[in-house]
Length: 372
Image (cartoon, rainbow, N blue to C red):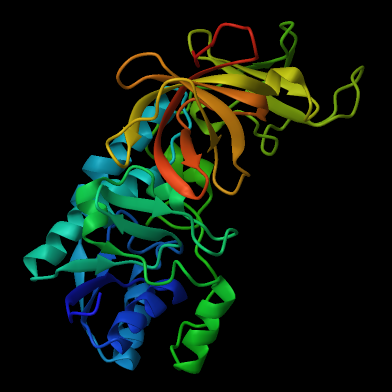
């Protein structure tokens, strides 16, 4: 990218987007910062940090020497991301709003806004890499494997990737902080954000209860023994250990309890004891709404690798096509607590091929079962 371009950078409160803006500025490109406000239900509560985040982003822009503007995408976020998020939880699934937030907001609404400003490219502080080939743009893992975010980027398409830069994808997190410190960027030591995309770090169950009605019901063991009461199936996910409120029970061993299933028809939460209980594992997953970044799905029966949650190691598997958008992933080894609604993301070495939504799970040689 030798020719000087106008690049619009998604500038947030953190160090990653700050360095992602500084690097192309150093190369002589015209850089404009855009701060996205995508949530406004809680502008006055203790968990909403958007005002301070904008102040921090403006301070970063001032040090780098770029203009910054604030853009409100709250309506788009509510319609394209948050509505699906609530629907999935109400249906007993475990969604990942960060994935939709990327494909619908950061690389869609934001991209369109950047293009309206005359941008040739957008840049973000995501940890990923792009390789441009004659056949299209490949999405590759970041150099810093511990920070790689391709799991959250797997639903981007060729139009989005062709207009995108990931300036820090070749750097480690420590190198990013070093650059920020040397350039006197004020957010160089700021901790990484967690929590729901744009909504922040808040008690999740209390937050969800504001939008979904509580419907309490029994907590049962697989043999039907009632061991407690749940507050509503939407507030639990497969593999969950904390927040069950059942502890050790007289006449049972002291192993921890884990959520192993949800019966929506009976409003029953099923739990088992012990991390290694076979009912917490699945070796075959059915996946729907598959999206292939290069628009070329692999040959059915291909040996690839996949992961079912962020930060887990890639696991060898075989992918078989059921129909156009539905695939079956058969793993070499059982996977722990895959939950319908989560994303299965597929890799060929360092290349992220795409992924889809888990709809059903089963142990080897057993029929797949869906939630509910």
